[in-house]
Image (cartoon, rainbow, N blue to C red):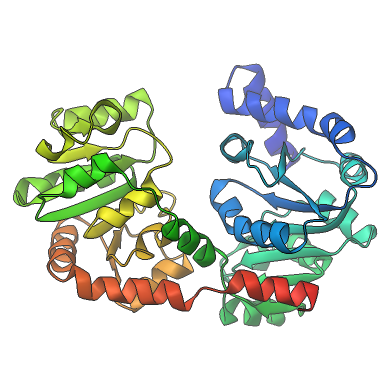
Amino acid sequence: MWIYFFLVRLAALFGHRKAKMLVQGQGQTIPALSKAIHKDDKIVWFHASSVGEFEQAIPLIEMLHKQQPQYRIVATFFSPSGYNHFKNYELADVFYLPFASRTKAHRFVQALHPQMAFLVKYDLWPAYLKELKEKKIPTYLISSIFRPSQFFFSIFGGAYLNLLHCFTHIFVQNEASKKLLGEHGVQNVTVMGDTRFDRVDDIANKHQQLPIVEAFVKNAQKVIVAGSTWPKDEVLLARYLENRPDVRLILAPHELNEKHLQFIFQLFEGRYANYSQTDEHNSGSARILLIDVIGKLSSIYAYGDVAYIGGGFGKGIHNTLEAAVYGVPVLFGTNYKRFREACDLVENKGGFVVKNYKTLEENMDYALDDSKAIGKITKAYVQAEKGTTQKIYNFIWKV
């Protein structure tokens, strides 16, 4: 980890934007905490590595804010993407988490003086966990999931595995995780599920009405919503559209930088309407609607017959539950097996794996033709998995 942070600092010196933001932000945290936190504040600390993990913390933060208003909530991020996305989050004071030695971890925890701490999934920092345990601060790991292939369980992972004994309690997503931890001597574990199901259900219940999208889909026979896509996803979808003139596409790329947008322009030969440059009077005449703004995707899934989730040909698929909650079939690439919900959707025949163009065509045709029946499967799955937040709250506060 020290080698990693040295390289980050080196990159910052050479002008790498994200590295520079990270180093500067972390350097300001402890002085900012000392000014912002009063000695009488009752602090609950939430830490998440980035955006997706913090989405799993939000349901518990909201419940805590409602049920225990005497607490002040502080959230930290390691990544600039998470910090920048949530820095104005109204229910928490948001800071970078400093890269810490034991001395700096001691200073951080002393300045924050939390009454309890929550970490999401498995973003575990040894100095902080040891400091929290030494100070006997109740510390919880939520929505975690463990697999034999993880570093914890390798021949080199013993020290990292021992960090799990720093937690007061660990809430895991499934029985397999609990069994695996038990086999390695970690017993303070309860199966609770994933708070993301509560989060996506809440978002769906409050989803935005989008007149531009409504006009786009109004006279469409079939609509695919492709979310968080990368170039390989987009190449497959472009080819599919050539063979299905009855289908319209709403495309929300994962990245909106100039290079990616130029790639999309060339791939689709500019034959699309930009969300930011059209209105409800003009969008209905387009066949492709390019979502070139952020913050709309979770509501846009409600307008599709089928959802295609990007990222499956890279590091891993993006959020399938954002789409599944609306009762639509979901398709994604082959790198999905680290995600329990994606595996469950495939097993339940609500999700379909795309290996190449042939499987995209076969699965997309099938999903479009029977979208309502398949959509009942995905919606029922999400509804059945709700309630994790309440169970965790009840466990900790003995409700």
